[in-house]
Length: 482
Image 1 (spheres, rainbow, N blue to C red):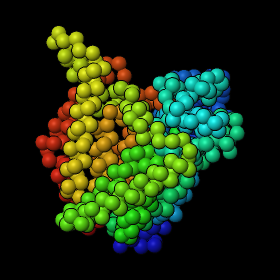
Image 2: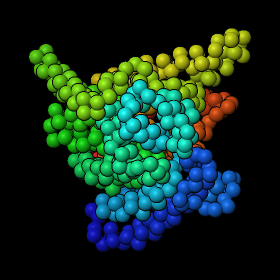
Image 3: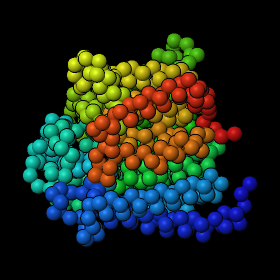
Image 4: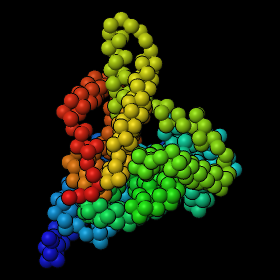
């Protein structure tokens, strides 16, 4: 058992790692103002930047600083796995590492500008599920949005659109202030995770410090939640609260929070699958009808309430809205890399099938495989593996999704961080390196002929994973440690 003296002895080391990480975070921010997801046109300077930094030097400084931050995080992980990272110290590390990112230019994603645009559209009386950012053509906000999303309505849920409208109204007309305001909105989710994850970890006998180290303090968590202000943060926070209710056997309340999370992003509905899987199994027809009724009534009630409160109608659940996130074929997506590789191979054999058609077919295959994987996990979920089952389902959905972005991996990591899987080296690798799949400006790092490398690697990894039986302990594991 750890002693108070033992923990105190780690204090200076954690302080050193905290300062080093803060230096790395500050360096990332300074360089990011030149090569990050900065507002456009480039003459629209972020208030915190290094003058005279060339493009190449900017990349060099940014990745060197990111390396310092990542190494500091790894060092903290060593301390955390020794059981010596307290929740209070985790809060201190969050303040040190996140503060520079909070005031700096966005990094690794331009989505926050789309969020701002949705809020501004709503503020001006437009329906964000009908109008696209193109209605805001002209000015730095429109120019800052990723070009592929300028003509797309919002794909997000009604409560997020309502929150976006309120945030945009409070932030005024300065683009930099608007970005900061949306980060402040996501910080509500970060704070919730910082409070709830340790409680979940203690419930399952896991280490609260490791849970926060993996689930919040990682480069993936910091860049996703703070720097690029992704709304996944609020979704995960509500899901975490739902899991907390589930551990207290308040099933209907847990279902309500999963449904609330889905009114930000729909993948949160995966929580309902594992929540009702255990009581459903072995129950008679009467109990199953009651369980199904409870799930449907709670979810519909939350959806009706959220949709009515936002006042934008039901287009957020229309087929066109649901397919918006899948419109892009990016090579960092495993099934897309395989699809382009297959198309290239078919072309080499003399068949001229359109590459896009082949990729779409492989995407559909991935969706079917994801559905099979979800069914397998749900059928294997037990009372002592509900949270693990949720984390695995979310990772399966991401790996086989038609479009993958690094912050999607955070969904499964946040759940698994409070279970016996929290010490997984594989999960730590994802938390530390997943954001490198995109560049500082938000563009995928695999492009052009990169599928010749990415495609075979995906296939080999899948074959190895299935034939080696590595999936068996994942499904057989339990939430509780020991």
